[in-house]
Image (cartoon, rainbow, N blue to C red; front, side, top):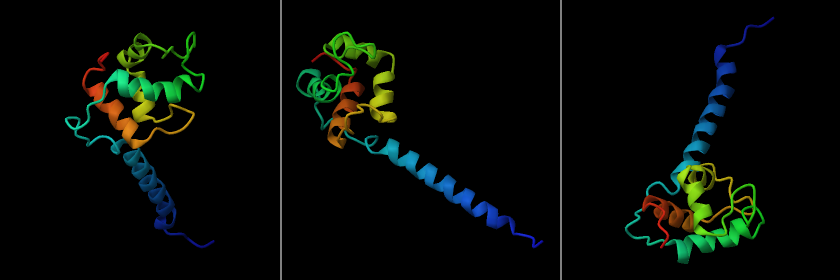
Length: 120
């Protein structure tokens, strides 16, 4: 039996780790360095439109939904207050499940959240 070098086994592990770290960094960084002073996002003109086009239309967060009712501000604000809105939409990016949000949409949501998620 021929002895194998430890590096032969470590190389695939190192590659997998580097790829995983890179993917996680890319997943979080695309909206982190935005200047919210230049983005004036409001619930009525921006966030509500994004929600209606992506969350309610897909049937996931419509009136009476067990996943949360986003048909009005109060329903959205409840998910904002418990942290699940930001976690699912901006961090995990697994919502909406109908299509990925554009970078512009995620920036507007991030700035709206940074501003306290007002009903404006």
